[in-house]
Structure formats: structure tokens, C-alpha cells
Image (cartoon, rainbow, N blue to C red; front, top):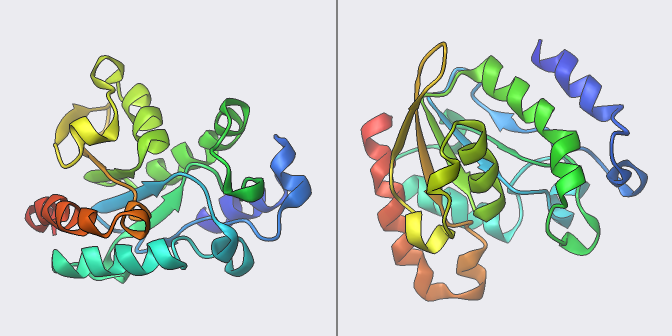
Length: 188
């Protein structure tokens, strides 16, 4: 089922991003994981390789996971958008609307117990999807907190986190992120 979905994304033309697509960045990791990470959109390195979080932010993410005793292979990681926005600009509303049905199918297939949102765009989308719209605030106010939700099938813990790229702009943020990632130790 996952391969069918990936093929569907490869053929997608629901928004304009397909016109500049190098590769889709579908997602990767353990499909039986308890922990799913959702970023915002692929960058240039990701678009070239087709792999999420393989550039500078990916190295930081790997280090943060390691600090919590988690291997990258143990989690599943994807983005809201499966194609890179030009110039790494922020995702636009029409692109998010076009691409999130794929993300929702990934969540349905994986059935994570924990969804870690990386940054404001993924946090806003997931909070709206799971009925937490009234709790949406900037990531600086809610990072590292656990929000418990239930859907028809299971309970899910949603943990908003800073995007690892923040460390590339402000090295002092690394300790804050490491502290936030420690919360994941209880879900391994």
C-alpha cells in the first residue's frame, strides 16, 4: 500500500510544484514505528536525493535523536509537502491543501503513537487536523509539550518541536532542542 501511495505522489500535479520538481521526497524510516516526525517541505539536498532531512538540518536531527537514545531507522520521517518549494520558500496554503491527503494516508498506514511536528507549518496543520486549533501558538510557546488526542482508532501524543534548522541559525538553540527531544525517551 505504501508503494502505491508513493507512485501516486510521483505522478501528482495538484499544485504548481510539480513543474520544478527534481524528485519527490516521500518519507522514510520504519513503517511500524511508534514515532513519526513531520517536517515542512524538502530543501535542495532532499529534492536531489529524494530523502527527507539529509542536509544540515538532517545532521542536527540525527544528533538530537541520538541524544534521546533513538536511531533514525527506528522512526518514520516525512514532510507536509512532498516537493521542494522554489528557493526553499515557506509552503503556501494551496500547496498544503493539495499535498496533505498524502500525509494523512501516511499517518493512516503507520498509525504512530507519537507525532512530532517540526516547525510552525506542520504544527499548525496537525493541530487543526486533530482538533487542537484553539491551542495553536508559535512554536516558541509550545515546543516540547505533549498534547494528547484520540481519534477513532487510537490515542496519539502530539509533540511540537522546533525545526532542527533553527540550530543552523542559532547554535545556542541546540540545548533547548536536546531538552525537548528527551521527552521522546518515554515512547521508545
